[in-house]
Image (cartoon, rainbow, N blue to C red):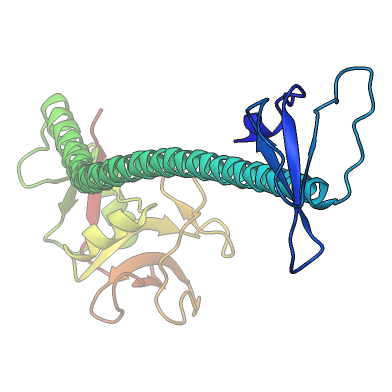
Length: 309
């Protein structure tokens, strides 16, 4: 339709203007025949609008107005088509943008889901590994506890064996010493490297000393707690080899050495009169402190000592 409007008009044709009786309007009527006759109230003009000439003026402007109205309608219709096309293009762009956004969102959502699934898988694996490590740690602790208990038991066994070994060593040494040391004579009692003999007769301290020497021995010398305790179990009253006959203030053993460890009874020595010789008296004093100074001429049993080489 728009192509017919903007086509170049045919200026070789004639047109007729007819005046109505009722109004002053004019109507242009195109005539295709060259020999048409003039009618009443009609004026026929030759179409002289050719190139280079001015078209004749019409008495009525209705045709020009119609042409303007048609042109306006055409332009309005074209503009409406342009607006419709623009709106369609905008809608198409919006649809394309929406599709792109949906694709991006789906891609992002898929990526997020994949990452979430991967994280969940990693978390599950880590939880499983944690549980396994806890189990292994518990097993290691149990093994460590058992090893600690075993170690304690072994240490107790070791200590026990050390005590047993020490006792066995002492017994071995004693047996070895007994085997290597000569035996004491008959009726003599062995103590350490000494042989002890308690007399049945009673004599003064000086006679007792001489009797022991006649036997190749001496009056007993006591210089340890163990020896004192042992002799105290053998006698009730007996002379020992301690005296201060040479100096009333210095006590010496029969071998000439001064006493360095004493076991005097309660209140002894009191040195009454000439009490210069010493006896062991279990009858009057408690063990082990049972030494008593006494007059040397009093007859008592005596204990001799022979040193084993």
